[in-house]
Image (cartoon, rainbow, N blue to C red):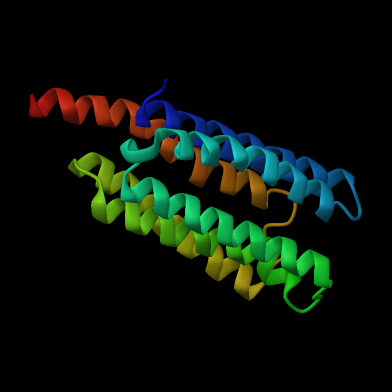
Length: 172
């Protein structure tokens, strides 16, 4: 079928592409929330379904990412459906930095290998910085916010693959 490593590759690719599409929609559509939600629904369905298909081979770390991704996406859908204007700045901006900080912080704590731990700890710290910036002024990163998220969320997952091989080779 496929491996956890290929699942990680799919997470990295789908997250990166979804953030870049989100940035494009944000720059070209005045009211693109529904288009963004559909983009993320489709993009995250890929690794979520792959996780379900992995079954018992999916470890706790994978399930943590699935659960927080689904929770954050459902929160966005709820805010959109209820038109909660007061929550929109948090939901559509800060939440995705907070989400990344939690996910990458947990990942840094549980993965093997010093370089992998360092990669994910740096990603978590960058997400905390992004969350603080967006909490202070959501428009401060306007025009490139989702490009930043594509880099600090997608790239660490893509870099993990060679670091994992390097760690596994050194341990053997």
